[in-house]
Every structure is written in structure tokens, then in C-alpha cells.
Image 1 (cartoon, rainbow, N blue to C red):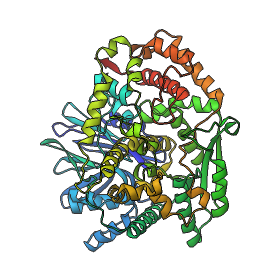
Image 2: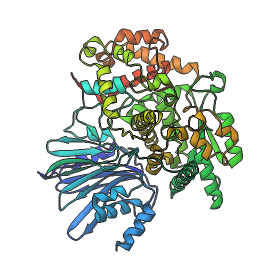
Image 3: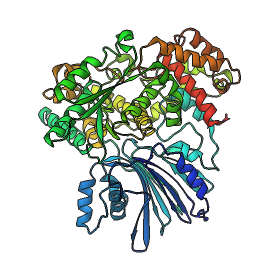
Image 4: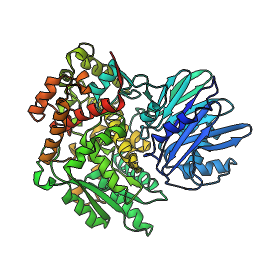
Length: 615
């Protein structure tokens, strides 16, 4: 896992801009703490920061390969899970390999297959390859955007980086936010429209897309998408395929030259990964699997049962540890550090995020990094196996908007009067919602229920899942930790896409099919456990802490947040401990304390990045 930056200009010599390249590359030091190197030429400059996972000696980047008169140079961030199979195919085609890292496989596969190679890659990746003879750059991002990639076009140059901070380090780039950025930040945030950022003219390469920059300009193409087709497999065959795909995905992601572990919350998803991984370790006579869970000081005293969080994790974690004999570590986070990490979490995203849901993950990963460099997570199961409440609740299904973000009136009221007169959040949300639904292909054979669920599944996969994937990558990589997500193997997602609703929600339960498939390998209490989201703190001292932070911001009349938001509304939020904002800001977890923390992050972001406001 790594981070990279670069800029290309085919109309002039840029080789003297070494200081700019170094400055941009240094911003990604946390993504790649182990090595730094550069590629410098007349028309292309590439910088790379490396986190060493596989083949320390032969995986150095930027990596160049010469074929005939052409030199191809790659900077790469990710892990290719079918590298072995692809390498064998290339060896049969006559290619030699000097190492065993997947960077070399990706580069030589691109040289051999061209853009057709993108249909063969299975993994988490983003990369840039420069062809010095054609003077052509290609940027590529994986199927679900697990690995980030941003770019902008400026003065005939393309400037790109794994994180926005890398682009902002270029002297020609001035951070700006316009009405679209305001709508993204407060209408959709912490979600964002695929391909769009809050910064004017800085774009995200969409998942499953590639970009080519050459003398003809900039060309962007989608190389993969979910395709609707009739599901003809029997129930038994469906279960067998799901079981195979899960096991194959997890085993492929256990490859590492450095210590590897798994997150374990005692929920269904992390328990599945722990079970498969533990069995694999035992079969291969490896030491016990290292597992990690997160909790908060005094959470056992302050936990309050709710529909969204029906029970705490510890009881179920102990069941799994006892059964699979993992070497378990329970990370306990205290309230002050959770609040104090809000700024680092914002910087990791380059954007206000999921408040303490982000900062807790950042601190969790910081502690995991002390013991391991690679970690497997159960992220993405809820999106593809129908685990969220909104898959089942009629009010959410009939909301005609993103069901995790229905408080659009309250969001609009939060804007100050000047901004609100120029930015209609509901119109923007409706536009993005309907634009997204146009991509859903409904079949004639789909039942009304399956057709309805296709829509909500698409929205959840392309929007909500992307937000969680962004969180996972940024919080982990900020600590030099590679986080892998086996449920997000594109083969699993595209297979589940066409499984009818009555099978996917077997017995009317969230993740009913998944529960049935794994029923024999997990304890019954785990299989039947009601979904419980990522744990958050219930300690009242956290509310007091973030309330104090926001109050301090409001005591400063010159705080930049006042340029965007209604000061009196924020004071009402403070005076009511968040209850003035009557619905969750986002999802199920971002209620009063998290909303206040989000507002703190907004002010931190405005202070740190100083975007010019153009409305």
C-alpha cells in the first residue's frame, strides 16, 4: 500500500519542477512511511511513497520497464489478488520477472494487454502509467474505488494524487469552493457524488473508470459496471457459489510478507472473516490469527439499547475468540482522545467526515499498526447482502431520497441566509438522486420487490458504501496500515446483484442468505445476532467534550464557519445538546454529539485548507 502524485504536460518541458514534485510527494508520507522515490522526465513527473507489504527489494517505485524503444513507468497503490494467475499467463507469453510484487505484474500486464487488462484485474488498486514515446498517461481506479485517485487539469497539465492534499501542494492550485461544493458538503456530506469533490475543479476518478491524457486531450471511460440479468441458479447452487466466492476472496487476501490480522466485532461479517482466516491459518500450521476489537472507556456502564444498536459487542467477541482460539486484542479508546483526533481524521480525508466514527477508526488503526501492517475488515457486507434497516423500512424505501440522509430541510436551515438564498440543497439532492437511479437496469422478469430493491442496492453500493470505503482507506493509511475488504471482491458483488430479493433476504431477515450460507461454521448466537453497527461511544463526557469544542468556536465571531452556516441555529444545537436538529445528520450513528463534532470538523477544514468561497 502506498501513495503517489504526479503531473504531466506534453506541450512544455517540466523537468525542472523537482521541488514541486518533492513537496507534493511529501504530503503522502503517512500513506507510505517506508520509502520515497521519483521519476523525472521532460513531460512527466511521478512521485511515490511506499508502505512495504510484498517483495521489499524488488517492489520499489516508480517502476520502469523498457520494451523496444518505449519505456513504461508506473506508480501504484494497492494489492492485486489474482497476481499469481496473471503472472503465469504473462510468463507463458514470454515475459520475465525480476521480483514477485504485484506492481510488476500490473505494469507488464498493461504493456501486453493494453486497457483490456482492466477486465482481468481483481484487487484494490489505483495506478498511473506513463508511456514516454507516445507521451501518454493512463490513470486507473479499482471497481469500487477502494483506493483513491484525484486529478485536476490546469494550464495544459494534468495534476493527480492519491489524496487531494497532494494536488493542493502544487503551486498552481488554489483551493476554492463554489455552490456545488457547498451542496456536496452540506446537502450530501459526508457522502459525495461519485467523481465530484467539494473543491472546485478537483475531481475524483470514478470507480471502475480509467483516464487517458495525451496530445488529443483527456478521455475517460468506464471499464466495468453492474449488469442486470436473470438469476437462473437454484437455491442450492446460489449458496454454494456464495460460499466459494467468500472463501476464495478471503484466502486470496491473506497473502502478505508482513504481519496480518483481522478486525473482530462479534458481528456476522467480521466473524465470517475471522472463521475463514483462522481455519486457513490452522490448515497451514501458522500461528493463531491476531484479531482486534474496539471499545470505549465506561461504555459498559453507559450503553443504551436502541433499534440501531441492540446490543454491545463484548459478549459475542468472547464467543468467537473461544471457538477459534485467536490471539485477541481489545483496544479501549478514551473520550478525550476521540475528540482530539477529529482534526487528524478530517486531514486524513481532506474533508469533514463521519466525526468520531472516523476518529475512532483512526485511533483503532493506530493501535492495530503497533502489531500488524495488514488488516482484514468486514466492511461492505451490509451493502451487498442487504444488512441495513432501510432495505426493509417502508418509510425509507418511499422517501424518494437517499435513505441514510433524509434530514434535508434541517440541512438547508443550517446554511446562513446569504448562502441559503443561492444554494437549494433539496434541488441538488434530488438531482443527484434521480441521476443515479437512471443507471439502474430493471429487468422485465424482476418482481416489483426485486426491482425496488435493485434501486436501493445500487444507491447503497455507489454512495453509502463509497463513504465507508473512503473512511476505511484514509483512517488506516494515515497510520500506515493496509486495510483489506474481502466482501468487496467485485465477483461477489456482481453475483449478488442478480440474486432475487426473496433469496437475499431469506426468512425476511437482513443478510438472510449470508446467515444461511455460514450457519454451520459459526456459533448459532453469532449467526442469529441482529445487525449492530460500528461501535460508538455512549460516554456522556464525549458530548460534553465536543459541545465545549463547538462552543469555543462559536465564541469567536470570526470563526470561518460563520461564513457558511447560521450562527443562531448552531447555538440552538448547542443549547439542546443536538436535539434542535431533529433527525440524524447521516446514517444511524451521526446524532447530536456526532453532528456537533461534524460542525467542529467543518470549521477545522475551513481553517486548515482556507478555500476561497465563490458563490
